Every structure is written in structure tokens, then in C-alpha cells.
Image 1 (cartoon, helix red, strand yellow):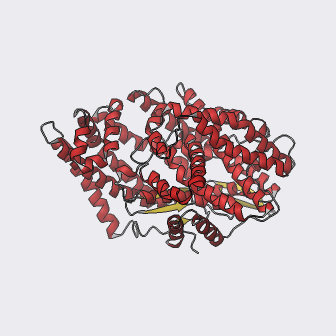
Image 2 (tube, rainbow, N blue to C red):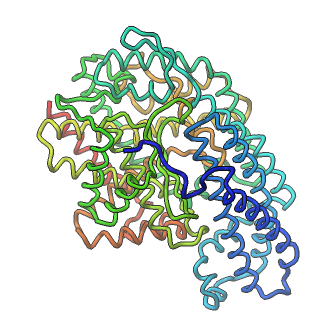
Image 3 (cartoon, helix red, strand yellow):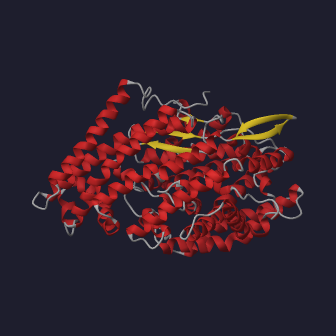
Length: 589
């Protein structure tokens, strides 16, 4: 089975007639929208007709732009030195800033129209985009002038976007010096990081030490990148009138502070239970002072829970079918149609992601598959993102854009399907391995994510006054890990460079991309509990929930299933499911 994806459904190549035709058409659409905005956004015009025209034009622009840009970015993600992809990505990102002026003009014009509710009864297109339009009106208070908005958008390309690309280039091309089987080698960072899942404890520790040593080569450049991105975010937040980058993130996430506080409260309350899990794992691995960071992902149990890529496919597709044939068919097609790039290799970015290609109603998944059970759940996770995108295929481009916290729901729900279905057929020893793997993943999403939230909060606080040195960044990360992991980790073996290898810190438009993972895990746990109660009747309701995530705020989406995400009790109940598993694990050995 091919471990590389095919992008032919997007375009055969950058040189193809289709790509260049669409590139020209995209730029023409942008110019036409700018001209239209200059001439048509006047009070004397029929407002319904104007809004309908704008929605049609902006949907068309972004649909074509996203197709072109995705092709560039996906090529770049598997080959960081692809000069054509890099050049085209930068050209498109520069050109898309042309949409800022007409978008701002429209939003400000829309704000002068007063109550929009009568329009929704008169126009199906406006009714379809009611949430988008009402949200645009609310955002008016944070808009700058048209000229300032255009300038800021253009400056991002030589500011935060450039810093982000530099950081991706640094980590994608970083070669780690390591001795393997007595031979000195230079291996890609993603390959060495995956050694954390190796059965041999000496390999895990050696990989950890080599990884930390390698970061010294890029630590100064990474610190400069991080300071550049966060400095821009702080400046923009202030200019727009937000009280903080967190407030802006919450508004962009369609989530309120009450919901975040309720979730964080429950997470902090659950930390002692996770500490017990880490201490127990440390004890079983022979570590008297807590779990060293290099053994966080150490496989446990006597059974060999490794998979070939073909076995992983069969495992995922088969278990997805226990939920619904629709989900199983989706995953099977993703494998068969070469939507997945799974092989780790030099120049390819680390980690995993799913890119939903709304323009062609497909997805592409990137992973770095080495055969561990964790790699299987990662595949299931990313395919969950893809399934979420498939549920939005019939929506317009504007209505397919869902916020960060809800973005992790389908992915973690799919992980839960895989793990729970596997447990049903597992032997006692296999059940132990699966349970340990699930708790390790939950520890990452609750405890490590909390450490990242603490780190980013402190980073923003200090960046208000000055840039941070490498030493400061490392110290903040270590302190954040100690606060979150407590006595669970050995304080002598932490990871001071987690701010280098996690790309989310470097995305200016996605700050605090940490708590959404916790939201996704706990919301998905709550949904899965509902699925167990309702059975097959739950499936169409779940698909419906995913289909409306682009046109509702988070609290409204959750209410579809009768869930109040502003209640601490909801989050506590989800965490209790994990805490129960921790107690089972502690008592097993």
C-alpha cells in the first residue's frame, strides 16, 4: 500500500494548465470583488441584493483560493525545501490580502443596516448565512480602518507568517546526531521523536538526550521566531481593542470565558489522579522518583501491540464500522484513494494533521507512522477530522469554518471508538496495553496541554515588556511542566524545549491552541457516553451536530445534545470517566 498521498485531485503540478488557469481566475475574482465593493456598498442600494452578491463572490473567492493554497502547503509539508511550493504559497498569501479591504468595507457597511432579522425571512441565502452575518456585525467594534486592515494583513506576510515558515523549515530540516546500533547517524527530528515509543528503554533515553542536544542548533532562531510572532499578536490585540490575546482567541473560538474557566477548574481538580497514573507507570518501569520525560510514551505490557500500515487500516476501518458504515466507508476510501501520507522522511514536517479540502470535498492526512498502537490512534484521530469535513461538504465555504475547540471533537470521538472497540476483543494483557495507551494520551491532552496553557499565558505576560531569551523560555516551560505534572514526573528529566517542537505556538492566528484539545477530549467523552445510552439513534444526531459546527457558537452546538459546557459539573463528569480508568490501571499491576 502506498504510504505517500496523491494530490492529483487538486492539481497534477504547479506547471499544469489547470493550476495556472485557476490561479489567474482566482486573482481575477479578487480584483472583481474589490471593484464591486467600491461601487456597490452604498445605502441607496437594495441591501438584500447587495448581501447576496457579496456572499456569492466571497464564497467563490475563498473556495478557489483554498484549493490553490492547500496544494502549495501540502506539497511544502512533505518537502520543506520545495522552492516552487514555497514561492507559490507566499505569492498566494500576499495576494489574499487583497480581500481584506472589500471584506472590511462590507462588514462596516453591514453594521449600518440595523436589525438584519427581517432580511432572513426574505432571502434563503441570507438565512443560510445568518450566523456568519451576525458574527460579522459583532466584529465591527474590533475593526480598524480599511487602509490599516490592508496594511496589517500585508505586513503579516513579512512578519508572523515569515517567522512561522522559518520555524517550520528549522524543525523540518533539523537532523539529529544519534548513535543507533553502534553507528553514528543523522536522522530527521520526526524520526528521533518517534523513538519515544520504542520498546528498548536505552533507545528511548538516547533519543530524548539526542533530541534535546539537537535543539541547541536552532534554539536562538526558534526564540527569535516565537518572540516575533507573539510580539505581533500582542500589538494587534491592543490595536483592535481586545483586553488580551486570550480574549481574542475566545471570541475567535466562539467560546466564552465562563466555559474556559469551568473546564480549567475541573482539569486542575483532576491533576492528582493523573499524578497517580504517572507514578504508577514510573514504578512499573523502575523509576523511584517519578516518570522521566523520555518514558512518558514507553510501551508497556508483554504483548506486541505493533501494526503494519495495512493492519492499521483494517483495524481502523473495521472498528469505525462498529459506529456506522458511513464512517467506515469514509476511512476506507481515504486509504484506498491515497489521501494519507504516512512515511516519516527527511524534509517532511513532524507530527500529524488533517487538511479538509472543501473545494473538492476531500481531505488529506499527514502522519509519521512507525507501527505503534499510538500511531494507529493518531491515524484514527486525523481521519476523524476528515470525517468532520465530510459532514460539512454540503455547506458553503463560509459555513464550513468551525472554531478551534469544536475542531477536536470528531477526531477524539474517533479515537474513543477505536480504543473502546479494541478493548472489547482484547485479552487481559492487551487490555492493559490499550488502557495504558489511552491514559497516556489523556495525560497529554489534560496534563501536558495544561502545562502548555500555563506556558503560553506566562509567555504573553512577559512578552508585553520585552523579548524573552532562550533561558527564560526554557525556565518557563520547566516551571509549567512542574506545576502541571507535579510529583508525576521526575524533576531531573523534563523537556525544556517543548516550545521549539510544537508548531502551534508559532501560528499568529491560532493562539492558545492548547485548551481546544482538552475541550475536544472531554466533550467527545461526554458525547460518547451519550452514544452508549442512545445506541444507533445517536449516529444521525452526531452527524447533524458536526454539520452545523460552522454556523453556531460552541454553547449552541453543545446544546443540540443537551450539554451545558458552562457547567463545571459537565467537565467533572467527563474527567471522572478517565479517573475511573486510572484507578483500574493502578490496581491492575
